[in-house]
Amino acid sequence: MSAPDSPWPAPPEPTADGPKFAAPWQAQAFALTVALHQRGAFTWPEWTTALSGELARSARQGLDDYYGAWLAALERLSAERGLASRPALEERRRAWAEAYLRTPHGRPVILKPT
Image (cartoon, rainbow, N blue to C red; front, side, top):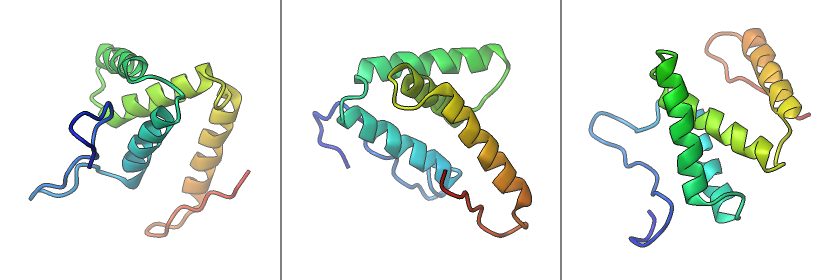
């Protein structure tokens, strides 16, 4: 949990209905965003601007995918800051899709290191 004067949010607390994250990747994206902010990769106002822009774009497309927008904002800021290139992000997305498609149902997806 973060301190009351912390500029970044605390991870969502589980509720009686279950966890706040529907999938592990959502929690990982959240944690990565907080860690990058803590390391100075971007300010919290820069993050909120990026996220709100992606949420607006998603809404214009008729999508209701909060963590999809979160991931898109994280990828965009990462590329803009030189943390990861767009081609590297696209290659990782392609590798993940291929790993997912070759993984038998019910088994964990294993993505080999690049």
